[in-house]
Length: 122
Length: 107
Image (cartoon, rainbow over all chains, first blue to last red; front, top):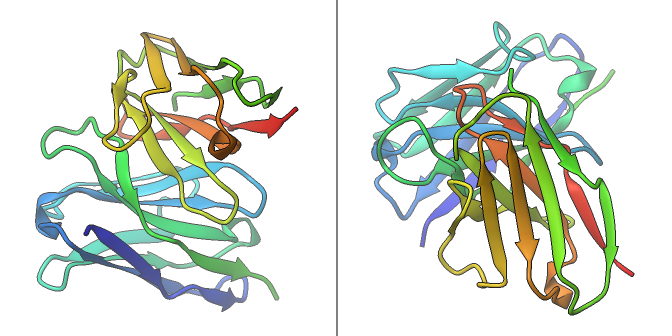
């Protein structure tokens, strides 16, 4: 069974840092682009970042560019999101998501984790 | 960035109703559109990809159509399990964007 399990969320002060992890199982992790998507409390979905399976290509939403860094360890089947200079507006449930299909850059997200909550507050 | 606009924002319907949700893109996205269902406290679930392809395991009462800038998600006969929030998402651009969501409520 394909599974994604996020961890690392918590309460952090504005300007602080946090690293999220997403442990993957049930598929050949290195063969799939992976993404982070967040959802502020009571709000809609916001795409945050995507990294290719080979870790050679990354994309970020303007709202996090320069502050967040996506990375992955294919030997450990784990995706990461390093979040620096955190702001109140980064408060959200952070999901990792796997791409559907195996080739090209046109893909939806077919498997999602349960999410990890990040709260930025003093 | 490509803006995605869903309508309506909220929809009240009864079991057995035919329901249609519309999603419009600010520029052409070909057929690179997905639909997700999200229930309270749960992660989103992929229903439709490439505008009209049904994800495995998704009931056939769900269907998607459209191309370019206008898309629809149709539920042919609403079931109790379908009361949820639905999101469209474009993936024509490297910078993915979602619609704001449509909440389907019990009438």
